[in-house]
Length: 119
Image 1 (cartoon, helix red, strand yellow):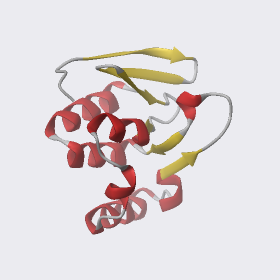
Image 2 (cartoon, one colour):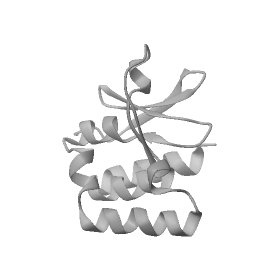
Image 3 (cartoon, rainbow, N blue to C red):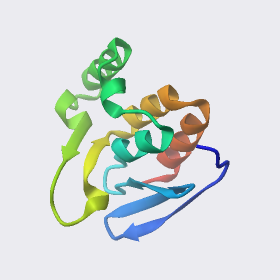
């Protein structure tokens, strides 16, 4: 990812788009969840690799305990359907920030801003 800028805009009534270079990262305004699959793709990494790390597992478990949100609700995988922008693994805003910190400092800043500005 070589771009230093990004643009945010509505892409459909149920999604906000964050343009990073040629890629679009979607965020749901109803709950702030971010498409982790798309975010990782732009960074050249895999959400699966993030999720299997012991630090990620510990973070997600602690977040679940603290918020009362089940682990399975902190990230949701959506497949199929007729809206490709809605497909992929969607993560809670706090998980998105933690994921972005793993991806790079630049992604951490961007995602933190998206979470603050959303919803």
